Image 1 (spheres, helix red, strand yellow):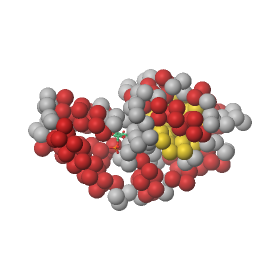
Image 2: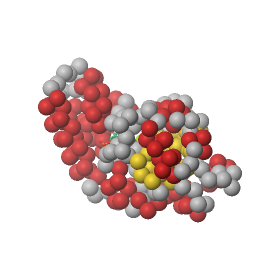
Image 3: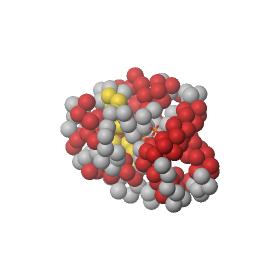
Image 4: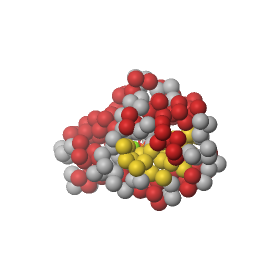
Length: 217
Ligand code: B16
Ligand code: MG
């Protein structure tokens, strides 16, 4: 058995916070009379908060001052935090816990690689923080996915080479980041969206431990 680095994205992989991001952005979009659908929301997955706002403004062809943008960014995050404040372990996505436990039992190092600046409190609230040997989030990196910085930093903290690192991602930008970083990408979600991933599963209930065992053989 070898040692591999298992790097998990947060939003959309471990917990379904994408729905909370959507609600908070939708509120801003509504105020600005910008149409913002679930399809539009796909464009924001794995993307930083600042870039997400720019994408929404581009959708509505709205130009705004930095002051306005800062106000909306603050408003969006406060709104988002009001949704996540009550999160607990019941919001861990199906099948995730079983895989984390299997990795722990097999002494495989685990890291978080998320664009979110709210990642740590969410891991704490869901009781998952003790499973992670390293946490790299939006506070630690300067380059957003598809730049591989977040995953490369996570692998480095785990002392494992990129080639021996495996990334679970639900966003196109995140899958691309893993591929650019020479890591094994596992897409979690729709195959039509995530076709660049080496392996694709609809969710973690589709991943059996034999598949993970084969990765660490
Ligand atoms: P925050 P991930 C990403 O997290 C989300 O997918 C993305 O929708 C969000 O805009 C971004 O985090 C920033 O989040 O506003 O909390 O800093 O998927 O990389 O775990
Ligand atoms: Mg994600």
